[in-house]
Length: 436
Image (cartoon, rainbow, N blue to C red; front, top):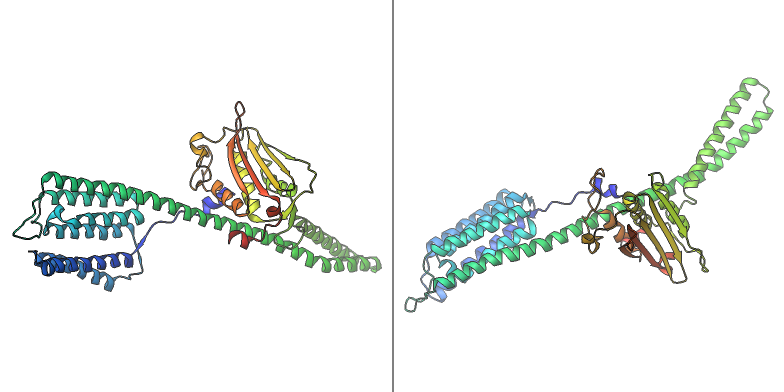
């Protein structure tokens, strides 16, 4: 079950569209032109207009070239996107060089490309862009033209203040980019894991539908085969020619064989409906059966209660979720897995426990998160750490509450408790409503 997600799903790579970067670059061009116009014309400060406008013009020319040559809707390779963001930093550093260096309040715009990289590019490229931004800020600390200001009352900032500005830029780049990267990474992992959940659930739906189609085909074919069988048997009684009699006998035997095969198919699903109604004990036996031949003793105990045994839909989300947790218990058990179930008029509960090493303390609070795996190193494949996440997500979507604990010392092993409100369990709807 876990292998389905591990083999067919791979976390998506992060790519940023060219159009997104071009929009940001055009916004920077317009903002820079507006700032120079206001300072030079509105405030009448002495600004190095020619070199500043030249830098802005080169940036605009590059934007036009990219829009003409490339499709703006294409997604850039991370390295190419990082190159454009690095160019933004260099262009900003050039403008700040002619307008006061770190004395210019716009020096904090070094943060923008780094933050964009943290949310859209791999960590190594974000680190490289951050280092470039810090290097440019460090150069501007020592080398820059005077800050455009009133010539009759020039601003003279002490070196200690400029050092504080430099340090604040460095810390802001480091802290904010790290925070943005962590938040974006968590959101991306969750989105990828949910996509894997939908993939697994869709596969389970297809398997269940095939089961229903097989049962329907067996039902439809049963009547004509029964007719053929009866006619061949009657003809066999009346025909005296040994050759014809032998052929009719063969026809009857092969017809009976087809009926036996269809009978076995029908036993796989009691009806042709994709989601049969099934008792709780039948559900448990169905998910336990595939794991009985792996050298681990699986003990199933169904508590006898005064209330009638609950009956729910044969829902793939429930089957996969409970089956995946049993599979994990079998993987980690030393010799025994226990599956206990009980119910009353309000609650239905399934408790799955094993005698393995239990859940490590450092994983206990994070159990059920995507890409979190505790599989033994000798296990082949290892998986992506999505199995428990998918199982928990699917079960909780059906109204279940899933909790993870360890057995009380001196016993050892993990314990998973799955509980539904009885009314919710008995009214679990179709797959489409479960995943909607």
